[in-house]
Image 1 (cartoon, rainbow, N blue to C red):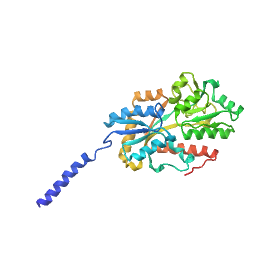
Image 2: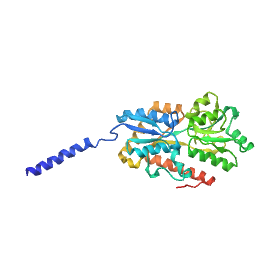
Image 3: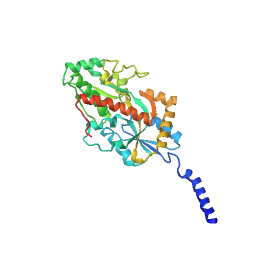
Image 4: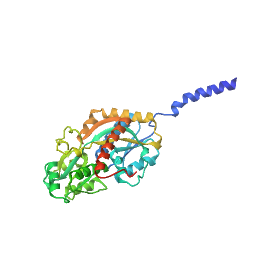
Length: 320
């Protein structure tokens, strides 16, 4: 009897010990790996949210930039970490376009688990000030008058395909120039070595304010409050519409729990509700758009469908 009582007592003690052993997420510092460089819209957003999330989680939140290879370096770093406290922060356009451009994906796309939608990045169409272009319509007219003379660049594969798709459908001969980093592309835009650049407003803002480049329109569906720029649809080119979609992604192999994903999404939404955060995001033309992992997944699917339709115009099919 004494043995049975001791076993029961041990079981009761173990049951009470479980909550202390299985602490809620997070149990240690959280790392946000950003797929774009310092100063990009995604980077600015990650650093703004990191402070608020750290306060809610009681753990440090570290932001680490891993730009390059159209997001692949950051994606592989998150997967290789095998850690549910290491998350990808960046635009979904970093990976949605990979099946069309890579013969073999260097990662398993099933690894990418949407955790939370955070913001919409405002993407602007910019030209060199020296081009003396005042509107998107004037730029397209110049491209038609000077076939093969103009070129373009953009930040991600998705924007590359959307812009190239428009030129193809319009019968315009405008070449694509690839860059490894946003700084080199911006410098070449200033010097008119490239003639059209699709990039986050945060990347081009300073040079536009200095008068070295000219912003013609935003690719977003809706006008951006506080930004005196038409949408591409208002400018007469709805085919160039594209909403930059930024969120948090976890690696499936990290073993992140549904409870952790739900908490992260809820806390992102709570931080986004802070008027100071909203104000600072707006200052860099980022739009608050928090959502759950399921809502983020639905937004990614919508973006992928748009890309597939445009890719067909270019004769592109998924290589995977």
